[in-house]
Amino acid sequence: MTREQRIQSIRRFVVAGSRLFGWTAVVVSILALTPLAYYYGSPLRIQGQPQPSDVIVLLSHGQLDDQWLSPEGAQRTWAALRLYKLGLAPVIISSGSSHGGLDQAGLQAKWLMLAGVPSQAILVERRSSRTYESAIEVVRILKANGWQSAVVVTSELDVPRIRGVFRKLGCTNLSFQQVPEFGPPSGSFYYHSGWRAFYHSTYEYAGLILYKWNGWI
Image (cartoon, rainbow, N blue to C red; front, side, top):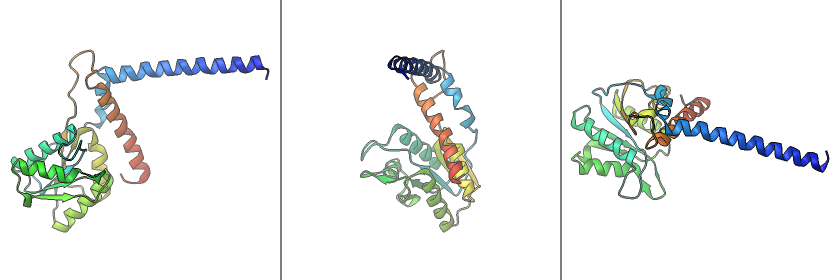
């Protein structure tokens, strides 16, 4: 190949790469900034109704520092509190990882106690570091206490993956409180929540594939 041919080959590669990048940017923008971002995740939204159970399982999302939960974590904690106040279960398991000096499960428990839930009605699970491990630890707690049913609090797009994990572990008597992270679109654009909706849906689709690959669901 001559020098001129190499230059032409490089130019063609650059042009093709630029076109691919441009079309990818267009497609992602359409998905992330329009109502398609919301409907992209529709297969993950499973309609369900929380049922009276032996225990409420509050799965953590994250925290910002030693005092504040992430917005999604706060939403989940509020949802667990609401279920408790409505009398759906007498006990809450606060499950979440502890890393980087932060304690998600412990902070959720503190917020619940500040809202009036007695400390004896809260069990804190700190041994897990990911969703799959949380499910293992929660199932262990259920068996140790002889509890047969649970209502699980998590983000709405997480439900298929989490339900699959619990089923794989032999825990099927579950209902779910799906906590929405964003509302449905009301116009032609969805730029306020679109990227988050697109990202989380993609994350969950990939998570389902990974969990299936690992035999966790």
